[in-house]
Length: 255
Length: 194
Ligand SMILES: [Zn+2]
Image 1 (cartoon, chains in turn yellow, red):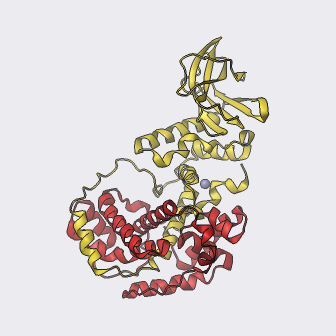
Image 2 (tube, rainbow over the protein chains, first blue to last red; image 1 turned 60 degrees about the vertical axis):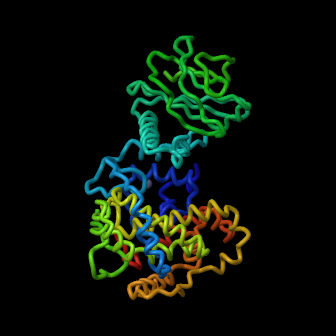
């Protein structure tokens, strides 16, 4: 990840709606956990609104009646119990640096084989997701971040064919593992990469890699428990209950 | 953290927009009529500046205003002023429309876009708007040419920073930085706080 991908430099573009959806989702994710950036975005958004105020123009007279008529048949939303999307709330007290903010920095600095943590698939699709799905994505991202930044996180990186690399991060205290891939070749049509926990020779499903992306970080599904390693296989899309092909790669977990 | 501060229109007479919006959130249609009077001009202005097509602009502006009615219960004053919330929504919807309709228009209309800097020539009978326009115009002049062009192309033409970079033949990183430091300079000149 280069310096210019740093979310801290994107506040202006964010406030002006000058980001593409994927980047916007990434920055939103970041803002939820970075008070200085969130504050700056609030101010720059207010500033952008001033640019809008300055170009106010008189609507057609009939438009008022049209709009007032239209709203009579529009049911209003119910208030949300919980803050969502848009700008993070103004905080009146200092919060401790969140795990996620820390992880974003870790990812920026270390950039596991050139992969950014927040290229996380869930962030990418945030635009299309419902509120609930977004919440889950956020929780997933936070869980992922918490694994990557756990004090006892151990990593192991393996090189695959064609320059691809895979890193596995295991936190014993959290009993979770994260998988970070970079440069994986596109799977054949109708196939998908599936991750497995290796429970002493018996393979347990641990999630699918999102197709169409050659770099990504994901939280492996399920607890690590007594797994001693992991594997990746190519499976029919949708995944399998048991591996049906020879593993593309296998890695022992870091000690 | 600073308190939320009212921006823009210097304390126009009549009920406060934020209060009105709270009443709209409770389903009061009369309050919505007052909100309409306060925001319809700015909403249409933003949308028309980005879309430039009058018929489409009114359609999008109407949708935005109806969306204000629908989502008023979700407005959170602690996240910014009511006007900011509404104009942010208006700009977002205009940008969405322009991007869905003409994804590649930037290249075709390069010359037109470059010429398309804010003119502030549209008629509006509101005195507040006139003052606001003067102040924004004055502050825009304090920006460097690059900052001003980048900010104007992003906000008033609804371009992504990638498109801005392409148009101005600048590196992406430069445009990101110009958008940010240009807005920061504007913020300071306009005395915006949030
Ligand atoms: Zn930040």
